Amino acid sequence: MQKQLLVFSIALLLALFYGFSTPTIAQQGQSGTRLRVVVDLVQLNVAVTDSKGNYVTDLRPSDFTITEDGISEKIANFEEGNGPTRTLLDLPEETDAAAGDVSAAQGRGPADALQGLNAALAGADVFILFDTSNYMYRGFVFAQDAISDFIRSLETVDKVAFYSYSRNLSRAAPLTADRAGVVRGVRTTVAGDDAALYNCLLLTVKDAAQYPGRKVVVVFSNGPDNASMVPPEDVTELAQSVGIPVYMISTREAQLEPVSTAVFERMSAATGGKAYFAGTWRDEKKAFASIRNDLAHLYLLSYYPAPNPNRGWRTITVKLAGDRMKKCHIRTRNGYRPLPAHLSAVDTPAARSDSVPN
Image (cartoon, rainbow, N blue to C red):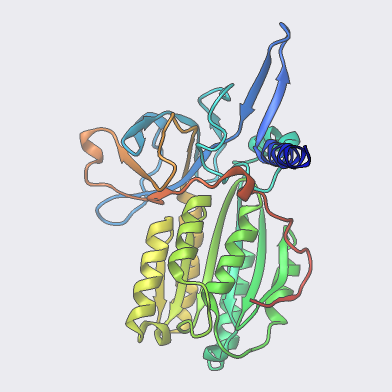
């Protein structure tokens, strides 16, 4: 009898755990029918350029086709650059709770999932991660100047966060609309010791994933990683799965190491970002200006995944319709791995300036 009671208790606890963790909303219809709404929006930041590298603007939703594992998807929301969001599909009444992306529902409970969805495309939040390791001794002040100018120039971005790293991560300025406060966080950073880039980038992506809407991570690194326990492949997959592009700005020092160069290029390409290698402080400023320009020209496409039995890696393909678009180049993330609902909820990021051991 005691064994049966113990088994029943464990089953009940598991049912409650998974029930509360699933990002669903129960709604009572006029007829008394209870509907289950699941927010599993997959968001894509898409850059479109022509054969000369110029941004292609004024495209319409009908110009894009999206497939996931070869399955055709319907665009639910569409936005160009800083323009308004166009809603093309109604919120589905019933879908597979774990079938879609976690980027729209992560970090929020059932009660506010719809509210978060409405705000999901309101603008972009930028997380900046600055290398303060001993690789940065020479160009420290110049890098601070370039980052400060970049932050001041982000006029259309909603909020900015500034983190720094050496062996540990320091949240110098948590996500805020106060640009002056973020710049103060930049100016108060000091040089550290070894570089644990991938450890700290993983924590930054996790922090960014807790907020709704468009997020990007911009990394300024002056050298290779020599202290991380986390492999870069894990960081890349998480950024892909939660839909966060990673932009990498690195100096000539990092470029001298072929392994770091290859990792930076693969990571940025796989997540839909870009990699820059700056030889001088002027090149650093140009790289930041290029990222700002990129953010202003991104198309934001989102869709609710069609039924898909694949529980592993899902490949996303975005193409342009029409012959005139054949010479255009599309840059976006190439897929994601659905995360179980009970693993997608994470704690609220620390709203303070501190050092986080890895």
